[in-house]
Length: 221
Picture (tube, rainbow, N blue to C red):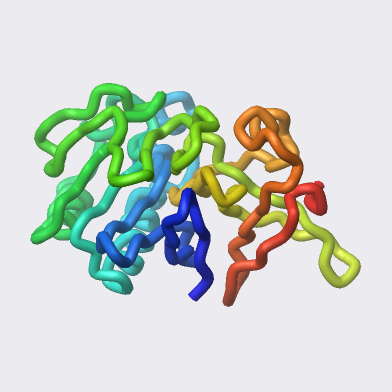
């Protein structure tokens, strides 16, 4: 499996867009944006209402693959402040099953700043474990793993361009791709990333079909 180093800690980079810290048995996902479809529906934008089922299914697969002791969801787990109220009974049961026999931490995000206690797990603004700080919005601090920006990279391959989700990292900090089924992305060439990675030498770890492709951000467009 591919790995990404952050402040001296090695993480397994899962092709789903999750990170796994083997020594801590800790799985990290970001920006699930559950119930985004139903949120759009309230505004008259009709999307197929299957994003929550699809996202939780992918999450169940990665949890089964790594069997973490702890799961951290890095904020914007729900698309809006009321999204958790729109969860179906079966989706609530799925979340409860995923949480069984493991610690679960919901990091609050800008879309879901006030999560209720009946979702299971605990809610926190950020979490620090050793040299690593887990938070929603990146600050550029060393040892930080954050989400929020939904990084994606466009690269040229075999005469055509391809756009994929990616991890962005310079070895001291990382921004995770969005995990949710309906989430978009922001190009890693956007100035938002240059504020976090104050060197042009940071990397895009692009999620391919079968493996991670590590490319200099400067080669993306």
